[in-house]
Image (tube, rainbow, N blue to C red):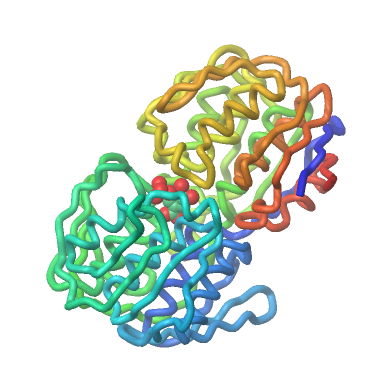
Length: 432
Ligand code: S3P
């Protein structure tokens, strides 16, 4: 499915962004293995999260969708999951596959986890290595990509692990396995990564310790079913925040967005570029900080993005690149080689897309240098990557000619209502 996107000169209104993807996966996973029933409000019903729901149904967990999107999950308790009869297909979702591997490694369950063409190219050695150190029986193919096979093992042993890459998925896989390990498990991060797993564990009553860049927990604790409110997804909101910022005369407001500081690097980066973002009505949803956000048009300037901000904005680089294309001067992204291991090689995909719409950009191994300029329009390959596709839809707000964005089906993995939300705000997006 391709989209043709044309600016109408207007981009405004109230935008409802869907529930946070990272929080939704974690809420389902912990609810499934907790004792008692959990109720999850505001869950994201996107393809990635539906894959996680299907996985637990395959393992005998009852999940019921009630009115207003409320999901109830009847937790089966520690050791209560059943071995799935067939392979578990996690579609496009790296988070589902990596976190589930960690969770299942410590349970007495045999399973094979796989996914779509993109997921079957993504590196898994980064989770296999620490899990093997814990005594798990986890294997992947010779090139280190899915399918992932998990077999029964003796009780896992807690480890102290220094992560070579800043990855919340790796940290989470180890911590989830650590809940079923003997003794203490500690993870040292090279840079701060999103801490939703830790927050979600606390919501279910599982204690952990956080000291600087180290997170520790003791195995053998208990997860108690609970009620969870999933905040709006800042990663989805980011498309509308940048859309409003680059479109003259615009004003967009977004309610109830998660602003967890381990995730909100995009706000810092855009503010450094000159964006006008008001954050008000700060409160908490579950264990996560949320706020209402109002954004108005502002002229942007290019900046050097500090490498310390990269892990705090890791999913927002496609849309940050669009902001940079509309800014005055050069924007430098470095220390971001992880972008090459996402749903697509995002450095390659962004460089190709920016060039296709008339923007000068230099590709580097660990980032890119974007020269702000006039967006002319053109045909962009999204490589089936939801965030690349949504980012280039927003670029049309500043484009002289329409932008055709190819291969947009996977937008449904994170933001099923994107098309309607973008149309409501004033963007002319149609399927071609
Ligand atoms: C995620 C962690 C990040 C992010 C991904 C979601 C998570 O990946 O890119 O979209 O929910 O834990 P890494 O852990 O690979 O950095």
